[in-house]
Image 1 (cartoon, helix red, strand yellow):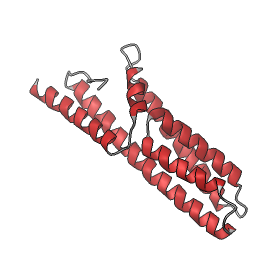
Image 2 (cartoon, one colour; image 1 turned 30 degrees about the vertical axis):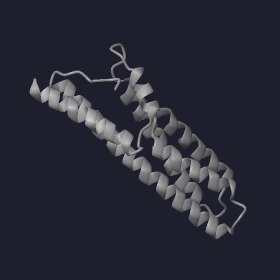
Image 3 (cartoon, rainbow, N blue to C red; image 1 turned 90 degrees about the horizontal axis):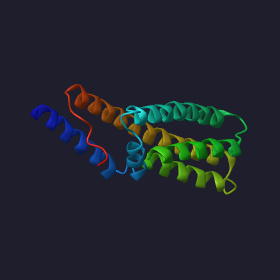
Image 4 (cartoon, one colour; image 1 turned 180 degrees about the vertical axis):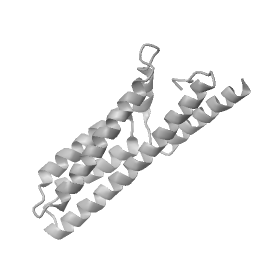
Length: 159
């Protein structure tokens, strides 16, 4: 039983760390509150859909930025979609870099085409970095949850 308590404490501490680092916000807590015995994998399923959708959007953004003539309206639409899905699962830092990216897209008439394209690629790199970080951290969180359950414990949600 001590090992279950230790695993639960590790899970709680890790989750608190994710919030303290600004990776997650209260929307993630709200998502967890929607999970119950009738749908025990709700959060994992929603976050997995977020991962799949985000990977597709990031690929589309990268391809769009490689074009000779970049369609910045399309770029903005993809970033807007990624911002919305990040917000819906509480991926706060991904959402914030998407907001910065969108703000830059709105100001696209300020500089020349080459500068604009390079800056957008830099923004995309930041989004990818934050996305990869939150994906890795959430996958670790879900593995910790599985360890707690496998040891016979319960998940101490909501926190």
